[in-house]
Amino acid sequence: MTCRRWRAPRGQKPKLFRPMKIRYRYEDFQVEEISSAPAPAPHRGGFAVYRMLKRGKTTTDAMGILERAWHIRPGALSFGGLKDRHAVTLQFLTIQGGRPGILRQDGLEVEYLGQSPFPFTSDHIAGNRFRLVLRDIAPELRTAVETALEEVRATGLANYFDDQRFGSIHSLEEGFIGQYLVQGKFEQALKLAMGGTYKYDPADAIREKELLNSHWGDWQFLLDNMPRGHARSLTAFLRDHPTRFRAAMERLRPELKGMYLAAYQSWLWNLGLASWFEEQLPAEDLIRLPGRLAKWPMPLRSSEAFAGKWRAKKIELPCRRAHLPPDHPDRALFDRVLAPEGLKLDDLRVPGTRELFFSRGLRPAHLPVGELKLQWHGDDHHLGQLAAEVSFRLPKSSYATMLVKRFQAAVGDMNDEPLGEVAPDDQGETGGQE
Image (cartoon, rainbow, N blue to C red; front, side):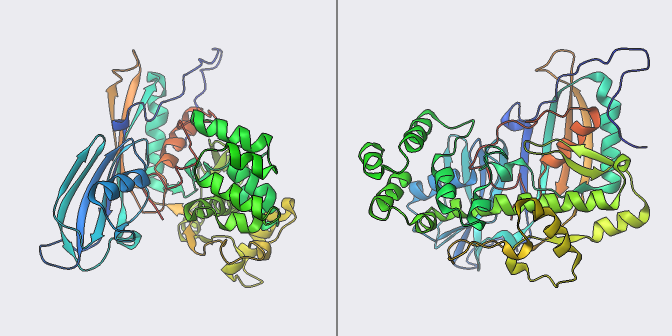
C-alpha cells in the first residue's frame, strides 16, 4: 500500500481537520539515551558516572545547574549529546573526580551510578529510544496514520536535519549567518548574530536587540546603554576596533559560532539530499514532509534497486575540507545546490580565520526506524479525537520529529510550524545527537 494525503470521498466536500499536536505536555515526548559504554562499577576509574533525568530544560541549562550546585571545576563534566528542551529526557554524564550523590531540583534529577575509566562522550551513544504521543487526531485519519507507519517500518525515513537545527535563522529572506561568513560579509553576519530576532525571544532580549539594531555603529552609545553581558562585551571591542567585524565574530561564544556554521552546512546538506531524491525518482513517487523553512521530498514508493541504493547512500557534510575528488557525484551535487548563491563546494570556508570553520563528516541518507509500535487511545485533552502513542528506536545524530512529519504528510497536515516552538538554542537533534 502507498500513503497519500487523505481526500474526501468523491462528491463530498473535504472536511477541514485540525493539525495533530505534539508536545501538548512534556510527558508526550520522552527520550531515553542508550549507552554502549561498559556498565559503571565501584572503584573502576577516575570518572563518576551519573544518569540525568530532565524535564523542560535544555541539556546545557541542566549542566549549568549541576555545575553550580556541586561546584564542578571547568572541563570536568562530559556528556554525549544535547537533548530536547520540550521533553522528558534521560541521558548519561561523567564528572572527573566526581563523588556519589543525588541532585533533585525542579525538573531535574541526577543520580550516581558508579565509576568509569573514561569520560562519557557521543562515541558511547548507541542510539535513542522514544515514546511520543500525537494528539488531536481525527478518527477518520486513523487508517492513513497506520498505513504511513507500516511504510516507515518497511522503508525507513529520509535522514534530514530537522527544524531544531535551524533555530538560529529567522527566515530564508533574512539569510543564514553562515552564508554571510562564507561570502566575507562579516558585518552583516555579526549584526544578524547579535540583533536577529526570534519569535520566542524574552522581553529583555527584544529590548536589547531593538537597541542594537537602531543604534548599530554608534558603539559608545550602545556601550553606555546596554546591560552587562556577552553582547555588551562585543560592543566594547567594536568601540575600540570599529572595522574588525571578523575578529568580533571570532569572539562569539564557541557554541554560538558552531551553531551558526552548523545551521548553514546542515541546510545545504538537506538541499543536497532533496536534489538527490528528485534526480533519482519521479515526482509521483515522492511525498513532501512539512518544515518551517521548506518541504522536504522523501520516497513514497521505490523499486528494490533504489531502496538498496538509498540505504547505502552517505553524503559528505559540505565544506571545502571534504576533499571530494573532482569526479565525485556529491561534488557536482553540491555545486548545483550552491549555484544560485554564486558559490561552489570549494568556496565553503570562512576566509581569513581559523576560529570559524565547518565540520567534516559523512551522514547517511537513510534513517532506519527500529522497535516501531503504535497504540491508539481516546484523547482525554481533545473531545472526540484520538491520541496515537508511538514508540521506536533511532540511531544517534537523527531526529525523531521526522517520523511525526511523515505522519503529517500522510494526512495532509502541512502546517508551516507543525511541531511547535523552534528556539535558537535548541540546536541539538531531538533525542539523537552528534
